Amino acid sequence: MKPIDVQAVQAALNRFVGDDVYLHLETTNGAYAAHRFGQPMAVCAYIRNGRVRFERAAIAGNRPYRVGLKMENGWIYAEGLTDYEVDEKGRLLLAGHDDEGRLAVALQLSRTPWPMSAIEEEA
Image 1 (cartoon, rainbow, N blue to C red):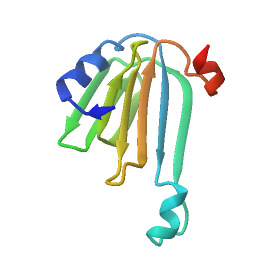
Image 2: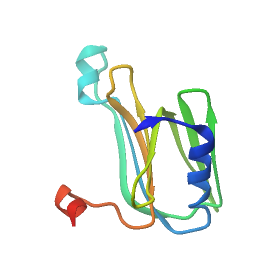
Image 3: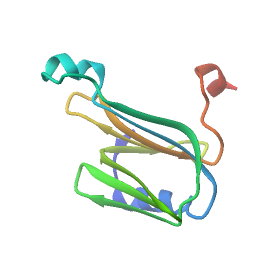
Image 4: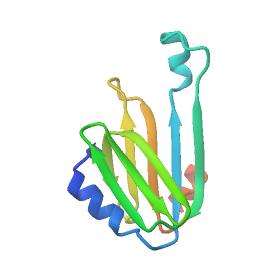
């Protein structure tokens, strides 16, 4: 992955507008954070292969960034994004890493379902 280029990410987001796409979205402060920062518990949200359609997509901010996907009846939103990649399959991978390189948030879009295991990924 490389640091977010706002124009490149916006162009990649625009390629998914109006189509059914598969969403992977997760946020976490990680189990590692609970003992290091005095937090009472680790917090996480996760969805994989949620099929969505959005009518507008926007990236905003100034490192870290936020992305909003406007659906007919609501929004999908991720904040804290720092890095991106468009892979060889045309999938958009956005991630937010902390100062130590640990994942805090991921937002990924694909025209095909995300694999559920490493074995599926290789097929």
